[in-house]
Image 1 (cartoon, rainbow, N blue to C red):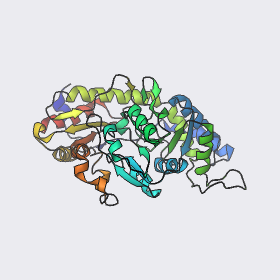
Image 2: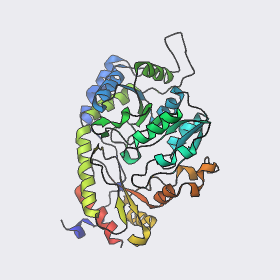
Image 3: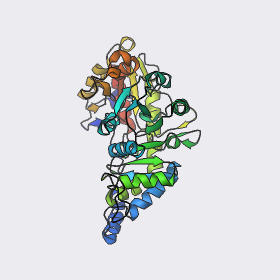
Image 4: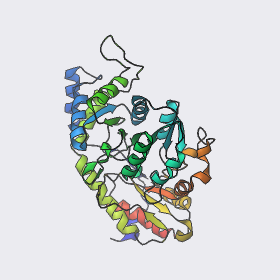
Length: 379
């Protein structure tokens, strides 16, 4: 393909990610069914059906749907009665740490490992104090954490493990869903995720008793019509969102396959460029290709990450510095002792190098060539 031709100005903005939209006419029967049921929320039939379909598809025992991923994180911490301090990563979306703050928990930041940018298990034990009650790792960009090592540390010190799996929908290691690790895992179904309910999220747990507890928490703590067992919250997924999720389920395998092809094309076009590194797939992992991050070494590449970011923007390509700044640099958390940049050298470096290139189902091959040609030609 002639790359020069594909570099012509494109007036359509290209963003990091866009929602996967099934055909509109296929959504109408779902709306009609909701109208006929006259059941809009509160664990309606579509909500129940989506939970069952997701549990089967993801290979998990129990899943509880939420109105968004942040409320799911907040509720997961409540469900396990987490208090005191929780060890977590600074390299994530800020909702990860906000969920701790809303539960009056002190985040303890630990540096990340350089290869896949996940929480570094070798740094966890040094951060444990008598107040530590849990570990909150993140499967960054859908790359699984070193889960066995993390669980070994948690077991040794009597800690709970809650995984922020917002990027890890459908991800499996050796054929087993990564959502089966830890005490709980939390998903996001935001509009820009691989699987979406427009807004939404879920908690994955491993027992019927825990699911019942979580279901109560997201519905004000009600056990039945007249009994409130505990102070809960209103975090239920409504029937319209559940219907949208059910429609997405019909297309999800195709969506993931398309994202895989886009990822492969990016790697073929960008391989061998000095100063650009991307995160290679592990052979034993089934991915959902949530994001396509590259890391830019300014000295080898010849330009900084931000220079490339601005060059892409001038060409109507809106890549994202994801995650930058670090959570630990934000005002609510920057004064914590563990937030000091010298405590987080790998995360700090990654935040200054990372750039997520656009990847979504409707991204065509021509635009991938155009994006890559700009990355090359900036040199």
